[in-house]
Length: 190
Image 1 (cartoon, rainbow, N blue to C red):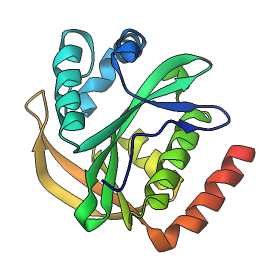
Image 2 (cartoon, rainbow, N blue to C red):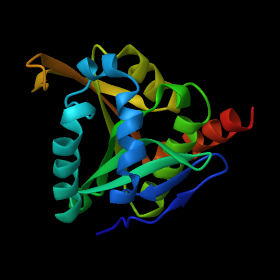
Image 3 (spheres, helix red, strand yellow):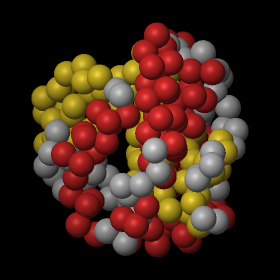
Image 4 (cartoon, rainbow, N blue to C red):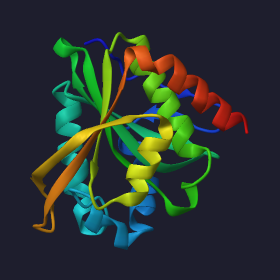
């Protein structure tokens, strides 16, 4: 495995490998925005939390994913994970959710800065993002990070609600990372 589940520490956030000790705070964070789940492929709140968490843990145990609890001000406010494709030196950052109070500030950009830096330092050539075409907030956030839109996969996935979603694909290549990193650092300093 090129990437390891190392803790990633920034100025405003700490990304800790997700473990059962995070579940109470993470489930409370997921329950804080019940309306958002219609835009996600899976529901991570309420009665759905246990199934989502068990599925994620299976992927972690198989070496297919690395998941992080996003900790800000000493509290777990969200989650984000890598889906790994080590043979191709690619990975995807996804399964990201933040408590509504943690959105719009430094938590998401610094989390992504730490994860992107970790991925490229581990030898990845490309980091991808998949976003529901209807999720305008997430599409804007990924674009603002500096990822480029690669295209749209039409009728790509059936969500937990039964809706067939189109998926917008974004990526950042290794050669693009220095400029993206510099912009993120400037953004966080401002």
